[in-house]
Image 1: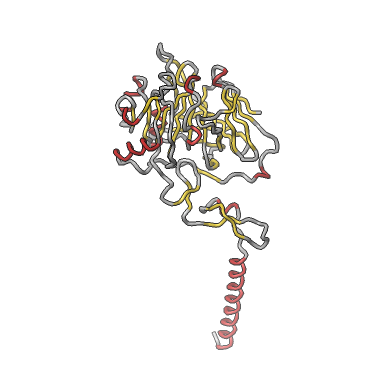
Image 2: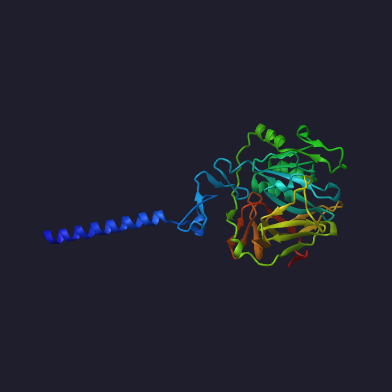
Amino acid sequence: MNNNVKIVFFVVLFLILIAFGSFWLFDRKHNKITSSTIGRIDVATSTESALDESVEVPVVRASQVRRNIDGVYVAKGQENPYPVAVMIDNHKDARPASGIAKANLVIEAEAEGGVTRYFAVFASGEKIDEIGPIRSARPYFVDWAEGLSALYVHVGGSPDALNKIINDRVYDMNEFYKGKYFWRDTTRKKPHNVYISSNNLNEYLETKKLSVGDFIPWQFKDDELKENLPATSSAIKINYRGKDFIVEWKFDRENNNYVRHLGGEIYKDRTDAIVTAKNVVVQYAKAIVYDDKSRLDMTVIGTGKALICRDGICEQGTWQKKTKKDRTRFFIYDMEVAFNAGLTWVNVVRPYYKVEVN
């Protein structure tokens, strides 16, 4: 290469570098974070102005991460408290329940006689003065506890459930043996009167040196933009046996969540807080009565059909739990569901129960 060619080459290269640098500075100054970018990074809710001062742009903060149990953004180091799964009563005499509005995940399934119970998971570190009433264990609830490696809190249980807890070495907190952590409310009827607090739960966790969760989180996403939500309200009606156990979730477009109704009334906890969920799932599972006490054998390991409702829309999908140690996961078109951050409520029903979406 002669000298003239070399000079031309370096001049052109120099001009290209100047142009690239100018473009980079301009782009950096006027950059906007797109929704696709938000899905890959941790975002806080505060804003800063862009080219148009009326446009709100999320500020990226390295200290914010999604909490493992429900996808809510929290400070780093607070994303994975050890999960506690409490067996909460839903008998008519047990209502209203305490603490249920502050749960991070709830699985509702029948115990016996058409009466449902709540597998309520708490893993946020939030202080809760009263959780309950607490009832007895069942084998399929133990399977769900194992999938989260959770501390399972209950008052006694069926023989099969108690044997399963022992044989599978499940961390459990049985009121029969750990009574000092529980109390009985004398204003409520037995056996619907056993309660516990988050302080007592944390004290017990400390004795077992359990502080950090050990489970694979679900996938989470940001809420759909309000203008993309359905214009008309919708509802999901789940016909458990008996009118007092019929569940209805009514979509609240303004807050992009579902308001729970039970037995025809808005469902509130003992503090009068209305229970809402960001995601509602109907999981279909086979169940048979296997003893003279009407106890159920419910198939929750394997796969089956599901209805997944987010952002005011319900879609047909499937559920899968490969082993008792695996967590139940949900899929639409073979793609794992990304839930909205917040409470997910899973209603487990038998395949022939009527579920209506309006």
